[in-house]
Length: 96
Ligand SMILES: [Zn+2]
Image 1 (cartoon, protein in one colour):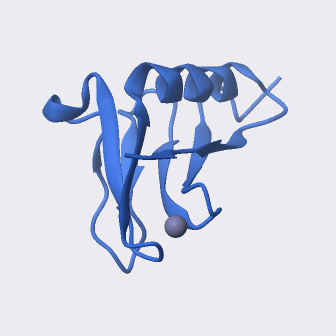
Image 2: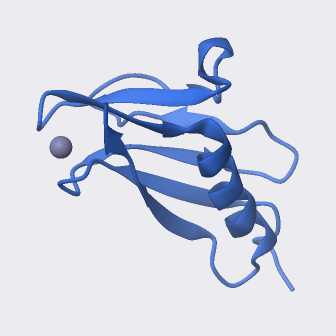
């Protein structure tokens, strides 16, 4: 049983498997954050007000918008948070 309980990180990739950020929870009682990558910008709370239905971001390698239903990503993150053995996962976003 773990120290990891309530902690998880979902890596986000575009359909070409380029990294487009991470959704993470660093500590059990903290808010979920979106980390777009150090080269792109700061971490922020996730989902934002305009992301309640659909999360969108931009793949700077493909130079295309990508996204996924927020509920789908929240479900995957919840699975990681509930799993004491596996706290890291990957989600593939779709081209929009
Ligand atoms: Zn890409």
